[in-house]
Length: 256
Ligand code: PEP
Image (cartoon, rainbow, N blue to C red; front, side, top):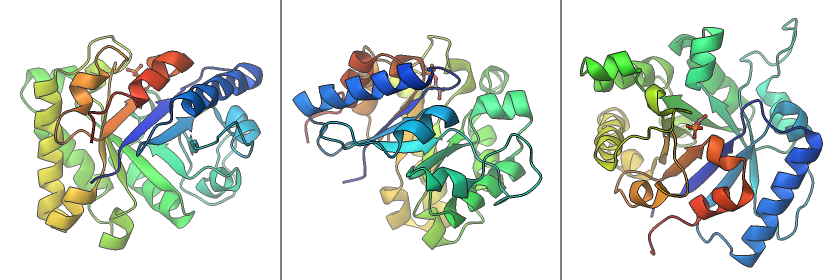
């Protein structure tokens, strides 16, 4: 069975105390109701990441991620954080190519590719975001848009490196809007992405790569998304800021 993953993207929310409290509450809920066979990842702000990633919470099974990294290891890049620095905190993952970074900070597919390489160099697993804009979807170009993103940022990796990649399909029009992709739309795109991996890296890799969904996924709609054959979990923004909602999403997979 493929790995099931639910990752919380806190974005620029939660301070040190509130972040600590949120992780503590999530941990306590997961002790009461363990998440069997689900990898649960928290991506806090860098400030909170440093203060919580090496803490041990009750019954700790949580993993941690950076929300972004620079592609250089060190140097004159004021305000940036390298993948190695993220790994230093005890984090094991990093989100790369989130649409908010592409839109607000001009990240190109080429830069995303360099960040993926940096993450792998530092021993982190990159959670690589892709997804079409509303204009691309209205023009029926969603598959082309995602294919270009993946080809230009991921498909020159070796098989060994690609085996450490997690893909997050996040239609831009669904992020933070309350309008999630329908199960049909999500399955169509996840199946398409898996097909691209099959063509590039063969069936075994396609079957093993986790592809998670992001975009207004919440406790009310997660079950209908997580039961889809090619959806292996979710990248959760807004709904990850409340412990009970996030843990409900973690428990939204069908019985094995
Ligand atoms: C995200 O930021 O990756 C995301 C999916 O946000 P939201 O769940 O709020 O749409």
